[in-house]
Image (cartoon, rainbow, N blue to C red; front, side, top):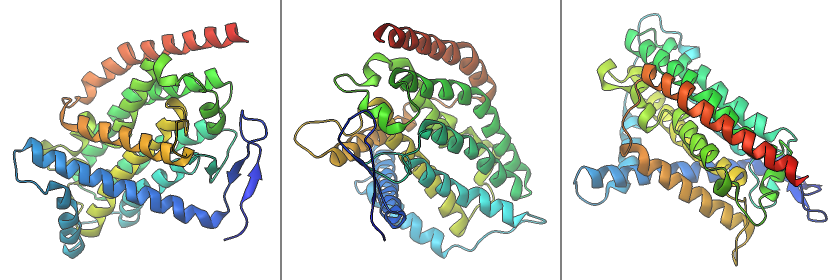
Length: 323
């Protein structure tokens, strides 16, 4: 797989960040896959518990995978099969590209100087992918679900973008490793709570999760996934979990100090913090009401956006004062 490339650690003189050889990207995909399985098992267990069902809900995702693998793919009249497949499979690709800039301790795949912008670009790409899934089926219900997601996107994307700006301002860098290194002694989540909460809300939104599930609503026969079945349905659902896991992983260097922590190695702390955030996001799925797209637009533009802009202003003032 080749020798890893050594580059200077961001913000920590003399301590290298290792940009791994391309072959090690498969290891990152394996970690992402493991997080997808964990998220699905957590969701199954919490769903069974909330429904008062028997124990063993954590194993339900495996049964669902087996069922979908045996299920025949549905076809619709004059569907654009290429766009339909790109939309579903693209979610997995977008999630993998998101975690490519997340340092696992001192290891990373792409140590980009604009890693924060890279993540934001990938989350914007999800807009097109979900909409293509709804458009490609040539079905009214799927298309309604796709437009619902776009309407939610208009409400969450700007607040999410400015939530990502706050840690970058404090670290005076768009490099994800430098943002993590700048949190020595105090995590950004502690003194940027608004940005952190808006970020988590944005992760739920681009994962079509929890309050942002009307795009998959039963009132439109499943919305975006109305015509999905078999492997296509499986890939789409795996993509949602993968986006949720990628968002949880990215929150660690941006708001939770990266690999900082006692006793354990830095990569272990990254994984533990990622699992904690992932559990929180899965747990909140059934604790928050669904947001109607038109109502959430008002909340996003009139509440979340001003709040996160004030947060950015305070961070900028503190950053200037400290220099």
